[in-house]
Length: 336
Figure 1 (cartoon, rainbow, N blue to C red):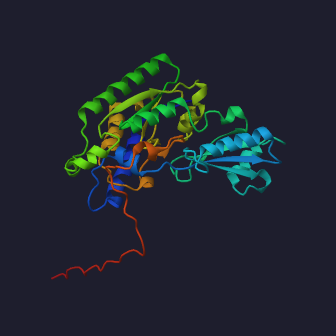
Figure 2: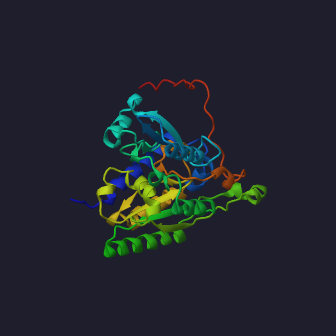
Figure 3: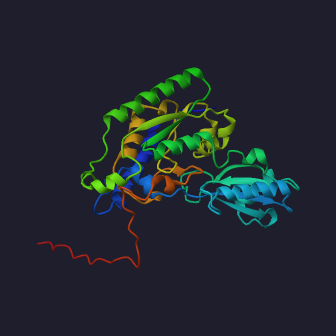
């Protein structure tokens, strides 16, 4: 039986994450650059793993598909955040990969398994999808029209792009999209970016920026039956344990270099949860350490550095070197 996703656990989880970030990782001088801008400028997209499992030599068609995947990733001059591995099934040491082969492997037929980045700690299972290594499986794996549009909007300066996923029930979808649109627009007009007094004084820097700093949200609709967006849909639905089983509309905010904050479902698409997400996205980046912030990255074929340019509002996270500094703690005051 499908259940309704209540917003309270999402709110509690995010509030806890934000609270811990502020307590444990805030630098001495709080970063006033908004989270979305710091994420765009300083958080490289984490690498997905595309693993080809086989029990014999790859055929010509399969070898060409592997080459095309490698051409898309960091192993060549491509720009997709992924790496490709070719592993003989009988020599696979990873239990997950052995399980994939046991379930999907066929004699003489290679299998392609797509895995979330190892840094995606919040996803329930690293496996996104697995199937035969063929043209249909590879098509739209590393890129798709909606992902390109998301990238286009983010590098144009939008704070976040909300992906709306209808469930197919007209009544539910109409209410959910109406709420999402209303409260996204409300946040866009009522919220304010952190004060940027120091940046405003640096006119030369502002003139060099390729991307204007502004508060701006938009919405894209991802239909579940869109053949070009099936892998994007799988990345979203596999990010939490029960999303695939829920027959309700969903909304996912995307910021930075394709980082999804979390999913809102059904009545969880509300003023409270949308407002909480929006405030986090446009608020000051109190924690610049990417993996201490909530969310997971999407697989996208984008040359982010080229599109962002060299002039940036944010400073890089200071490198930590050597052993930790030990402080002498004075003894407490003696009781009188």
